[in-house]
Length: 235
Image 1 (spheres, rainbow, N blue to C red):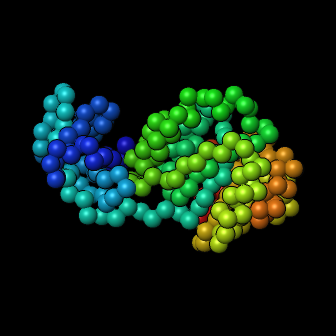
Image 2 (image 1 turned 90 degrees about the vertical axis):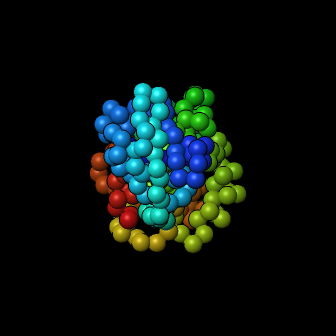
């Protein structure tokens, strides 16, 4: 982790935080922290800064915290993502968070296996943990919104038209005649389908909500690669 993320329950006084478990293990095994060392920290949903190690043993580390720096701004990007396979879901959520995506919607699609929605990786605790890992990697403190939508048609017909207002709505769709634009610099709502892509009927459904199908190139990318490539291209 490039940032030690702190939570309200970590604080034993106004400026002293006490950590154990995963964060303690990381500080001792990776940072090789010692008393007197400084580390980068951030308050969940708040500012970032530095902290001095004031106590360290096998059970706990205490930090004197000074946070006055604002976190990096989020990208003006809403990601509509067909639910990936469970074994890649964690990587996708952590990566999208580290890239600075503002909102993530996990949605259903015809090519999404029904069993994916029963995966324990969709548990709220796990989805939160993956976003925390993404924040720690990117030195950020603000969680992206995350929403689960199991029914694509009602979501597309009832919510998407309002969601895309004021943004450029794009649907990644291999073979589309229009290439994906570059360096937009304004709000974007981006839909990425499952492996194999959205069905033509799903592209038509998204189109009625204002989405334009765009092509990224001749190569078919894995979902986690497509998220990174499209985000980099758009911003």
